[in-house]
Amino acid sequence: MLKKERRKMRVRAQIVEHLKIGRAYYLLGLHAPEIARTAEAGQFINIRCAETLDPLLRRPFSFYSIDRDAGIIKILYEVKGRGTEILSKYKVGDFLDIMGPLGRGIDELDNGGIQVILLGGGVGGAPMAALAEKLHECGMRAIRVLLGASTMDRLIPFDVFKSLGIEVSAATEDGSLGYKGFVTDLLKKQLEKFERKDCLVYACGPKEMLKAAAEICRNKGVKCIVLMDALMACGVGACQGCALKVRDEDGVETYVRVCTEGPNFDAREVVWE
Ligand SMILES: Cc1cc2nc3c(=O)[nH]c(=O)nc-3n(C[C@H](O)[C@H](O)[C@H](O)COP(=O)(O)OP(=O)(O)OC[C@H]3O[C@@H](n4cnc5c(N)ncnc54)[C@H](O)[C@@H]3O)c2cc1C
Ligand code: FES
Image (cartoon, rainbow, N blue to C red; front, side, top):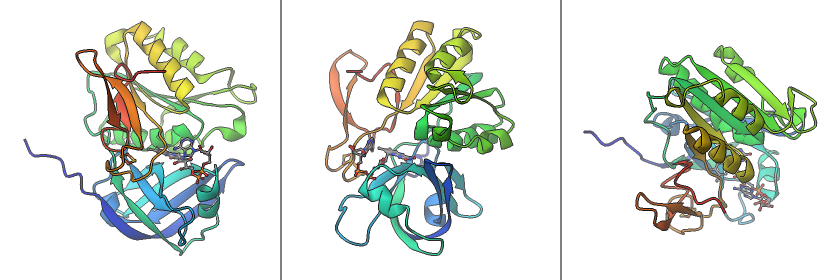
């Protein structure tokens, strides 16, 4: 069998779109045909946010959208600290030093999963947009998206999903939109409707949300793939800075690198502590 190409590139990518979305997020579009060509949903890019040495380390962001024909990749990000604050000041036409595609993409779609649930908490919903596009491209139609956030202005936009004809349900902790409570409550309700063998869940968001989703899925016997976050330094497997504790097939605890063996893992492998 041919091995899938996993070449990573370092390129200067021109910004083709940079919009503030609601109160919390920014949408950044980059012309990077070399990266778009092999990028997969679930992978990420590492952006050098400043021309200076502060901040020194690149910052990782998942693909939100991949347009291979136009050579454009998009990310959706939240301003968290210094790196993303600097990033938010760039204008259309400026260039950014980026590396990618990094990590393991969700390229082996589990066709055993007839009903796919995409679960996103806050900006963790971003990679679910690229995944929804990919699943749709592969002809899957039984896709359901569950998005959660503390308040409605922290929900990611629904438009990518809606344009694909995918139903979106929202949960907000303050009840400002959709179900009042956690998005994992919606997951529990959804799973009550399906047979175990008919369902597959992909989840990305805060660790506590992923832990809860993993437990709900385990109790229902449903497979759950989690996209893990980690503080990263190199992003290419060299520094061990993103180590995640997992349990191997024999039940032995070991460490893997989120940036290279991940970011997506079977939730049953992760040691949730
Ligand atoms: C594989 C991967 C994909 C990601 N995809 C996205 C995405 O699509 N959109 C998005 O908005 N963010 C994403 N992130 C998180 C993003 O990388 C961080 O928010 C960003 O690096 C923060 O940089 P900063 O310089 O602004 O903040 P810093 O000044 O570095 O930190 C500000 C605060 O955020 C915390 N922080 C820093 N990095 C992370 C992190 N990785 N996770 C959680 N908290 C962090 C710090 O501990 C600190 O409290 C992703 C992270 C990973 C590992
Ligand atoms: S960030 Fe360096 S090994 Fe993962």
